[in-house]
Image 1 (cartoon, rainbow, N blue to C red):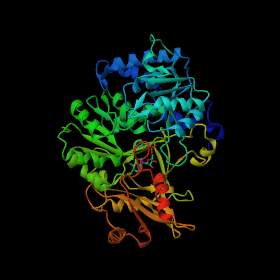
Image 2: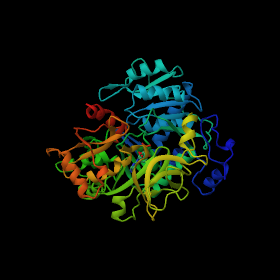
Image 3: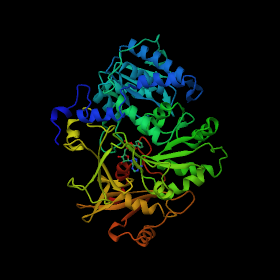
Image 4: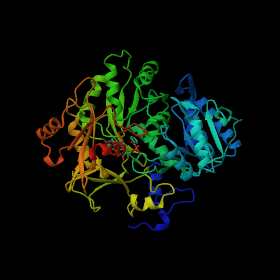
Length: 547
Ligand code: OOB
């Protein structure tokens, strides 16, 4: 059935709605419960008021205190003239200001644009203009970087930005602490409209904005908490940036609060910050991107911090190798859960009941029975079961259109509303997915398509390779050469290109997939959330390869 265009055109708010029949189904099946995020916190306070909701530095807030703080901040924001539907750029590290601000904005119906602390003028300037934000909330400084100076530059580029609110020393701007007034009631925003805008994680071009409604994001958090078996005894440590979907709602902060648990904010994912918090607060769950996990494992070799309360380490954001997955229980004393998710929506989780092999070798299966997945070839036709193809998805918490991006939307979605993820996957009969790379990650070598991810998955088994990434670099003509950038384990020598090629041949890899170049690096470039940034890597190794 073709959906009439008038049903899928964006609303004035910038949301591309779901077709009416699906909206009805999502409500009937209880996914969308008609509550705003502000209402959710109100209900949680009624149920768990005296329980500990949040630990951030010295600050310890019960549900009731968090609720009150959100109410006071909402009134303060309204006094500044911030209204329902206004966009507010939020760029805060994992500190106690973030949770009340998020709920305060939801209460007045203003839309948080959740940027990451690592974003700089290129991204923030673009997001300020794209969203037409009226306010920008920052920390004063973090790790030597002064966000007030960034704000000077951003305000010069974004005429609609009227307020800069600073957590800490405000300099020439307004202190966030002064955004505080007697609580009052605000008209409840429409739960079917935008609650927040997430930033797309893609490494191509400038970031896009992803509208998430109260209905769909609340479901995202609640259903994640259920699938991950969280309960009121859960103590979740947010190590990754709290403005990223993973730490925010998968199940993250919102999922933990949704079951009455406690959220602990860590200033960074470094063991120096995270380990003492695990011991002191009895942390049971946390989430990391795979590139961070080896450091956690190495640290346990000499660090005596007691991590015994940790039950589950979630790994997601990029591919976790089976080798690393198998090391985690022994090294960290906890289970591992693979999470294949995206800010655009769809979440896949391995489950508590999955056997060790599934947990080590798949990226989980969809969270919701109404996640509607297809795996297609380059022509958009379904591949045979078990074959690799591009993942397409529709569902109750997957976007129908990026915010204010008609050109992108024309290609990022099929005419019948599937989001084209750009991820190459293989589906097992059990429904579990194995991520095999990105569509655009394939290296075009002598007319053959080679998956960078496939080469990496073999090289992770090499004893002299700690981290690696395979990227295409120009071969000087039409095609590409395969370049592997790698880091040996601490104190070990790097292997030679010939060793690496021999190793791959021995594992049965076809000769046309063997790397042409090997570059030894101290560190691989990382994205704002800590994934290996292949675009930056390809740019960095390009001059070396053409020299
Ligand atoms: C998460 O979200 P984003 O928006 O930063 O990035 C999404 C993309 C996916 O399309 C996929 O390419 C990649 O990151 N990805 C994975 C993966 N998880 C995400 N690739 C391989 N294996 C995985 N387990 O990264 C995100 C959002 C919510 C929860 C977890 C991660």
